[in-house]
Image (cartoon, rainbow, N blue to C red):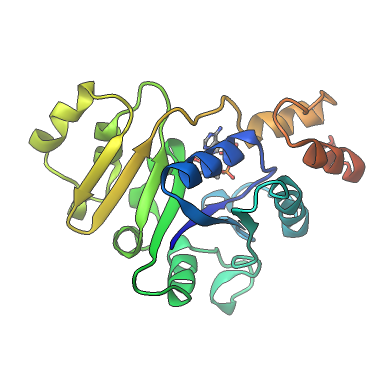
Length: 227
Ligand code: ATP
C-alpha cells in the first residue's frame, strides 16, 4: 500500500494543494494522502498564522470529495510537549511509519518552492532517508534544481546533475539515502499568500478555493483586515 504525507500551513488550503495531492495519488497509486496542517509551522514562526482549528476545518471541507484525501491531526499539538514548539515533518513521518507494514511505501509530498529549502529543514537527511519524496515542479524547474537543493551530504556532484538541465521538469532521482520523484503538470498559479491578500480586500476567492472553503472563510471572517 502506498501512502502520502502532505504537510503545510494550509492557511487556507487551495486548489494548488488539492491538484498536487490528486496528481501524486493518481501517479503513484496512493491509497491515502494525509493532509497534515501544522499547528506551529516551522518555517512561519515569525509571521501570524490563522488558528489551527480554522485551518483544520478548511482541510476537512476541501477534502470531502476525494476518498484518498484524508485530514490528519498528527500535527495538531506543538512538538516535544513544549509550548509553541514547531511541528517537524521528521516526527510526523516517523509516527506514520510506525503504523505501516514493511511492504508499504511512504511518500512525502511538497511543492518545489518548499523543497528548495529542504537543506534547512529539521533533520533533513533523516527525513529524506525515511520516505520517498514527490516534488511538484513548476515550469522552468528541472531535476537539477531539485538535486542542487539537497543537503550537502547527499547532494550529487555537479558533473552528475549538469545533464539534467535540459530535461523536462519530471523524472526520478535515486541516490543513496534519497529517492525523489519530480512531478510536472501540477502547479496551479495560486498561493495562500495571494488568497489572504485578496480576502483582506474583500475580493471573491471562488477561483482558488473549494466553494465550501470560500464560504467558511466568508462566514468566519477570516483574513479580513483587522480580523
Ligand atoms: P503561503 O503562500 O502562505 O506560503 P502556500 O500556498 O505556499 O502558502 P503552504 O501551506 O505553505 O501553502 O504549502 C504546503 C505545500 O503545498 C508546500 O509543499 C508547497 O510547496 C505546496 N504548494 C503551495 N502552493 C502550491 C501550488 N499552487 N501548487 C502546488 N503545490 C503548492
